[in-house]
Amino acid sequence: MEGFSWSNYFNSNSFIAAPVTCFKHAPMGTCWGDSSENVRVEVTNTDCSLPTKVFWIAGIVKLTGYSALLRYEGFENDSALDFWCNICSSDIRPVGWCAASGKPLVPPRTIHHKYTNWKAFLVKRLTGAKTLPSDFSQKVSESMQYPFKPCMRVEVVDKRHLCRTRVAVVESVIGGRLRLVYEDSEDKTDDSGAICTAH
Image (cartoon, rainbow, N blue to C red):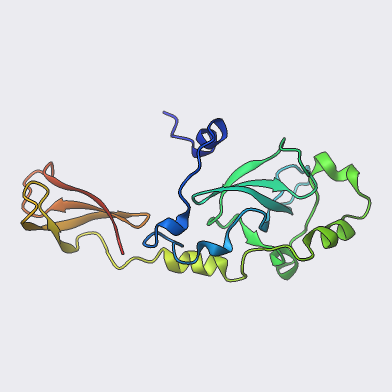
């Protein structure tokens, strides 16, 4: 069974998603200001026939939650090779990461013929451009640390009697959300119905 595709959903609709900054309790909620449209990043160049992994610069065309619609530098208004990527993934790096890591920057094959001096092109395009901070991946990692662990006990509001509380057990922690089950539930079918944030 095929899972839900956010990129297809946003490509086929003109919806605007609430930005991550609206959710201060969510990962990166308090430091998302580094991410915005027109920010340049270094990503894997998938439009290349070289046997080794190479990279290229891309700009954020649209930001929807943690997903960024990226366009390789040099494509101007051509959206033919635009692609979605989770900006918090290890596939996204700030400009300068390749130089510091000794990784090759190679222009996409589709537009390789457009310029003879790609270095000069990049210098011109990137002068004054904004990129992610060098510690962005560290911020992502730190924002994904949660104090709650499976089997911990917490006190929660009883969903059937809102003026009472019950003890619940943390069943799982997924992406900063807790799946809770009432401790006195015999078969775990009487769960708290809570998928709540872990902050």
